[in-house]
Amino acid sequence: MTQPSWFPDESYRAGEEHLDATYVEHYDAKARFDPEPDLTILRELGFGPKSTLVDLGAGTGTLSLAAAAICHHVIAVDVSAVMLQAAHLKAEALGLTNIEFVQAGFLTYAHEGGLVDFVYTRNALHHLPDFWKCVALERLALTLKPGGVLRLRDIVFSCDLAEVEAVIESWLGAAPDRPEEGWTKAELEAHVREEHSTFSWLLEPMLERTGFEIISAAHSDSNVFAAYSCRST
Figure 1: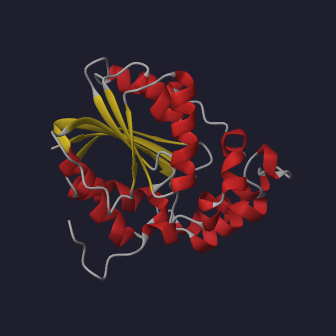
Figure 2: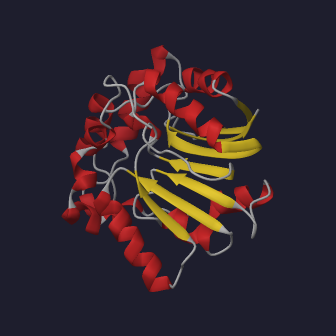
């Protein structure tokens, strides 16, 4: 599908570090992402041996690989060729053959074949401003079967405007000092300045407006992270 010239370049918005091989080499240790809690939730919503899942913003494939071990087919999508290469190498090492790797983003992924059962995305939607989040979410809804499930996790601020400074300063204050232990204060400050995390009270109406029913919403005690399970309507 040819896109209009006014569509953004998602590789530019993804952050230069995600395109850098040295950074990606240490990404898993830095992220410390355990996919099992999300897989447990997906299983409760019907995820299993016959399911197909699209993982958008798959990164180095942590969720994709874990899902592929228990489902029919996974499509791992990311704008970073370096991230996808890392995921591909891990899949080969594990002998997984039911993962398809696609270099694309929310706005460029063109799904082929039948509609899918599940879409998953974690800490990727915040690369898009709210206007483009809506466009992206509608595209995800159109990728899912009616009643299909979207599992969305991201940096989402669940607070009022008057609380923003206190919430962000508390988040920054808990950041580790060393990059290898996680995202540092300087990296989180850059996220707030340069990326596009939104408020829960904006994102939730976006989900409903773009073709989803929110089944469950969980907001962290820090008011910085949120996770949603949604069904396409």
